[in-house]
Length: 386
Image (cartoon, rainbow, N blue to C red):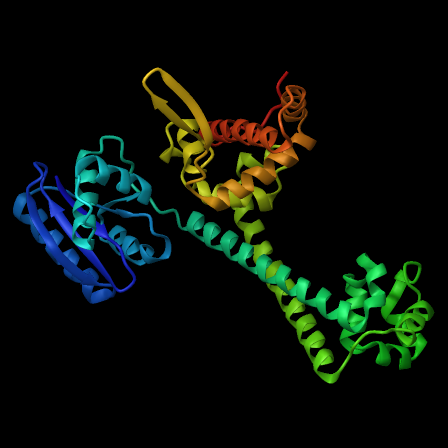
């Protein structure tokens, strides 16, 4: 067997190639991150395979978008590919050398050696629909963050230009009020507007805030307003509208993918297609994990353990692994504790033990991971405990 380790970077990738005895074929090969570089690597590996009559396995660190083009190329050309968590490579390197020196050349060699001795490695089979789901859910999260920032900006502008609306918290964020402010972006313009036009824009929501009340608030407003403030408010609203449309489009595509996957994860009470999609996307292939403990570690929710002599204790969670998965699991834990009788009983049990709310949620999340692991591995729907 031939083992190739690749240290992936933005502009170039460092490659080290070993035989099954650990002898070095190549440890000083750098290829550019383009088709010519990929083809050079393929030519070298295919030549070695022909010369030695041996298969070739290729490994790299799971570095997100930098590794995807190279992975796609290698898979297309029939290579068995493997991806390692960077933390595993770091720990492997520490265990096999005392040197503090760290170079791309050494990193590639460490990855190749890890691949050579790893008896539990699992081939990285890229499922295109899973890759798309991961990209979509992360894109959805970024859009949501931008939208939240804009909502904060919108509130800030209103508190300056029309502070009287602050007492109508929900109203000022409603679709009809945003529509009114887009057409009349200052108290002065609202006060001068025709009451019938305002009533029409309010639609059937006049019970919460009538046109006459809104105009009275506008006439008595002490807000600071200028042409610049109006422009900022209008453009902020336009951006909010755009993000709303984009999020709806992404959500629609996520829903379509979840319908195709038909995963049992959404049979757990409290886990919607949104939360379920994030959890599925971050886990990827469940068969990459042999035990729930491995999945727990991947989510960064295992406790750190301190051991010295006769003393042994557990510390805080390590919080390594996927922060997206950890976030989704905590939100899911809160919801299943409400909607699932089994998890609700477990929540009450832990609460009766005097544990803090967040500690209880942590216990629920860990139990949830074990349930998810079982459902995905067995492809079974969720059933409440009898």
